[in-house]
Amino acid sequence: MTSPVTLITGSSSGIGLEIAVQAAGGGHTVVATMRDLAKAHRLRDAARAIGVTLDIRQLDVTDADSIAACIDGVVDTHGRLDALVNNAGAGHVGTIENESLDTVRDVMEVNFFGVVAVTKAALPHLRASGGRVVTVSSVGGAVGQPFSEAYCAAKFAVEGFLESLAPVAETVGVRVSIVEPGAVASDFVPNIGLDRASMVADAGAYGPALDAYLARSGQSFANAQSSADAAAAVVAVLDSSAPTLRVQTSAGASAFVGTKLVDLDGGAVLGMTRTWVAAAD
Image (cartoon, rainbow, N blue to C red):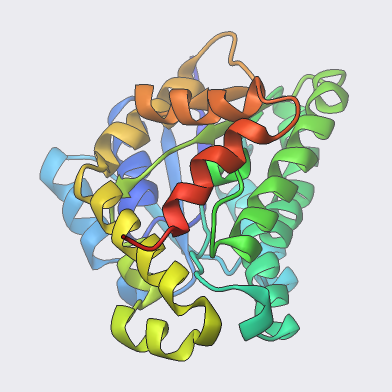
């Protein structure tokens, strides 16, 4: 069989880097993309360490010209596109009274509209190849979490978009899947640039709740899944002959998302998340 041509966004570090290397090791022709090619050294080193070759290209998921140039270039070079992995995204912590609407729009632009724009551009080529779209969402795409309003809103939107697209895309031979990691030990959280003390000091009336939430989050990430393990779940979806719509990357993520999927009145989710923002006695 021809090696499937797989484009991955957000490949400079973390889950995206691991997806690129593992997929290439598994026989995919990987086009690994990132916004800033100056950050490609870690990816190149990881690929070299296991003896695989990657096609590394620039792609900014918030820039229509960058998207078009990248996808057109991939098809010109490789003659086809078999899979798209939407992995690029950015974390965010904040609550709406204390931040601007422009900040919320920026979070939506990267985490939601970026997925929509790249998927739209890729679909004609995926339709031609009978390919698939695999999108890295989050357990935050199923369960709303304190001080993650904009981020979870974006991930909820991603999941609604893809869940709605899936049956339509399937009629033209394209499979759609959503992968939901929980806490993952990667650069994703450090890249948010959290300064707990200053954030709590600036949070005003929300300070005690934010302090409690950040303390709980620190404990969660202390026991986080590795990027490699989370990426393996994504690659398994890429290679599956019958991929499901929704996949979690760990038993903990499945249990967490399961809280929402059986919670018809919302009481179970609120009962859980209220404890995250309760100040210690």
